[in-house]
Length: 316
Image (cartoon, rainbow, N blue to C red; front, side, top):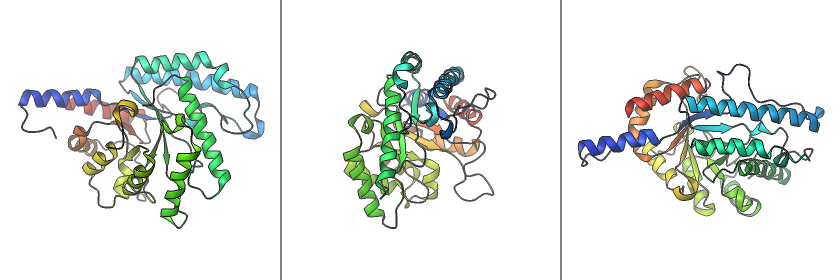
């Protein structure tokens, strides 16, 4: 909470400012725009013609989603990894960056002018700590593609690519060492400026990620729901503080966090279908002083994000 030693008026102004600065968003797909979802196709039917058609469609949908988000003050969005289908696969020789240069620049201008925060999240096959060198190679290609996509939009380094540390392979220490080595030696400077790691709910807790940060200097994106599942006794307030200290605000922007709730009567770790507004309100009241942008990983996407934004506006 705000420092009680501050005057009432000053305290209220600080709180209002924090509420107004926070960006809230959702990942990848807007369910309110009808059937407009990411277009892709099977690898077996790959052709440049199909790629161009799919990317043209995907970029037009992205523009519609961003316009929708601006209307509802949802200024944080995670772009789908499939926006350029098979871009990281060896089969793709097409120079999509040149072909779609103007489109990407226009989208980037829209993002920058409206101060929208952007992130991307590679699929589960991106595992930098795998003992299998081919798996690591494929993961590097995917990160390089997503880095190139964000670069092509002319977004600064506050646009991040979040990945998990990976598997433990029966030896968490060796697996962490492998991640650190591959992160430091195989990723380009440009990629390292965008990559952040996320704590997960079964293998690598925030504490584990902090150990990796100490040796690789990679920012940590705190997943609040995962932290509830695996936390080593860290309170959420301490977790936000520790994760936040891994971000350099002048180059990384304010810290990003993921947020969800447990879906009732399902296995532990299942993301909620819709926002629990009581829990969310309580979460904001106990953590807002930290300063962060929040990605809602909740099944009904923009619907919950709009409710969350409304709750935040009421607090202001």
